[in-house]
Image (cartoon, rainbow, N blue to C red; front, side, top):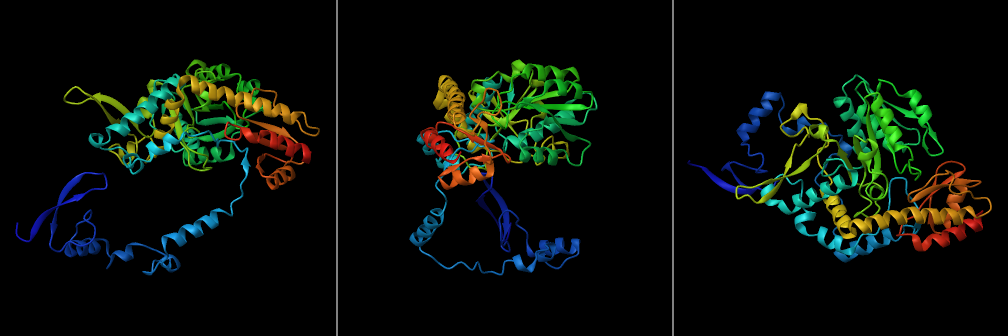
Amino acid sequence: MPGREILPYWSVDGYRSTHTMTNHDTGSPFAPHTPDETAAMLAAVGVDSEEELFDIPDEVLFDGEFGIAQRSEQSVIDETKAVLGENSDLAEFLGRGHYDHYVPSWVDHVADRSEFLTSYTQYQPEIAQGFLQALFEYQSMLVELTGLPVANCSMYDAATALGEAATLASRARATTGETVLVPELLDAGRREVVENYVAGTDMRVESYPMADGNADVTALERRMDDDVALLYAETPTVRGTIEEQLTELGRLAHATDALFCLGTDVVALALLEEPASVGADVVVGGAGSLGLSTSYGMGLGLFACRERFLRQVPGRLVGASEDTTDRRAYTLTLQTREQHIRRERATSNICTNQAWVALRAAMCIASLGPDGLVELANDCVKGAQELAGKLDAIDGVSAPVHDRHHFREFVVRVRAAPEMRTKLEERGFAVHAVDDHLLQVCTTETNADERDRLVAAMEELA
């Protein structure tokens, strides 16, 4: 064809492909429009230039200059170190959804390999078998820990996983209930995410009361009716208490045909009651505490459910099959995102996943093994119990406030919590102030060496 040639290029999805280019092609090979084609499209929408399609305020419009002076690599590194050096070096006893566990050095080395670190979603199974297999193993670990037969290959975080569980309940429930019941002590940010998920629908989020840190089953039984689509409970709770009546909560949900959703985390699952055995239909929560250092923002959400919800699972599943030579092969399957072929019939707006973080979590779980994971979970109970006992021995301090078993964290009563938090920070410790009289303390193996110093500081302040 005169004046035309076929040129190879690499697509954003990793395929080496070709497209027909003309001698007049300019700009990106992914939008190979000639000037005549561009002019025709602009005329069709009634504008003279591409710029008219956008309404960008002058103050943020790029003027062609970044305004960044040229610098040497050494000077940039020196300045960055100086800025980061201004951060306070605190011994963190923070929790409430963000937990710090030791990450073996080999996890960094393996996960930082280019085929993992630069990978996007594993759309092309022919070039992503290793990563797909790792995600399949991650799913298998969640299935074993939850006792539920279906787990997806990651969510953004625990909050979005709960939001997806709420919308799943609305679609899957046989009756017309539209209420999502959550604990009154639910983390405020997590509740806001759920409310955003159901905004614009007939669904609504309501709270049920707590009794000494756990669900008030008697009050909840009076509240349950056919209007409830989803009952959500947590163990451990946001205050670290272990919920003792999960079976009863599951029974209450199923008595009114509501779904029972249990929130937990991947370490606690190794020790606490198996969700499937207490009637959980869906399990959500965090898995980022293994494999990811505390980031107070980025996370990894887990999502597992019963098989009857297989086609309602948000995000993606990695499935195992066979290739034409009968070898085991892996591929993404049952993808529910709206960008795929389901379009407006999609059941989820999750449009990417946390594959790299899930990979790291799977590495950590495999490194610990079943016995190591249980040992870590036991330490989370014992460490909190021992630290609470030492704090409780201080005059003016009561710990734990809730007469329950605790996992990692617990609430402490003091005379003036905000003032105590500030003074502890001045002495090099970070804790949460829950209200005027309650502090919250979280301990894991990463701050175990600082526990006695924290006790001494609180004894001095109290």
